[in-house]
Image (cartoon, rainbow, N blue to C red; front, side, top):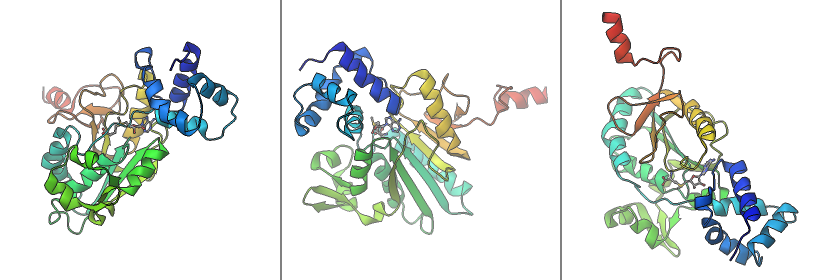
Length: 290
Ligand SMILES: C[S@@+](CC[C@H](N)C(=O)[O-])C[C@H]1O[C@@H](n2cnc3c(N)ncnc32)[C@H](O)[C@@H]1O
């Protein structure tokens, strides 16, 4: 199916205006595949016809559906494994000490897609249930797409989806088999909630998250919008909280609010340095000693 340049520009503009995601020329091949089932469901013959309906604003809700279909929702349980190892070996033990008096942790999976990341986090806690007994663990998954948020809330995954990233023992332990596949067990679900949220807007209240994960979400934002998103994410963190990005992503050059953790690769902390003094704490201590 062919799409004219002007139509693909309109779709790219719509996606970027709503979500910040850029559909650069090299990624425009996705349009046809991404919108094919929507066209079938709405009985619209061609992409150019879809654009005409959109531009004339003839069908309420259609532009929302188009944006959601154009988003890349790729995800799976325990994606890229290493960040989850970092969390269970370093971050959670540190937070167990930092929050020992409150016994409460708040975690934000930002750009959570269909929820696998949020439920993987819940499994980390459930697998060490004795250690976290008496704690309140609140895991919030958010996404700009309300259709993926609705799916995440149902917590039902196909055989293919559970096989990606989960050992059979984990599937049997943390899911119940149901007509549509596998349903997340209540023991995990009780700590996880989902809501629609755009990362270009203020963080979900009351903020103050101990851990924020925003993995594989900001890759296609232009530099300016990345800065907005990073600053918003940082403003949702507790002062001594932890931030994680996807493999190959970085905050460097994008925000002044976050800095790499000195000890752990892939982990970021809020930058509490005086913004007019960009030296590290170690550099300032050395200068003070000199
Ligand atoms: C590729 S998925 C990544 C899912 C998960 N974080 C992971 O790493 O497996 C990216 C998700 O980010 C969401 N997203 C894109 N732009 C967003 C925005 N401006 N605000 C919130 N979510 C957004 C998409 O809808 C999509 O579900």
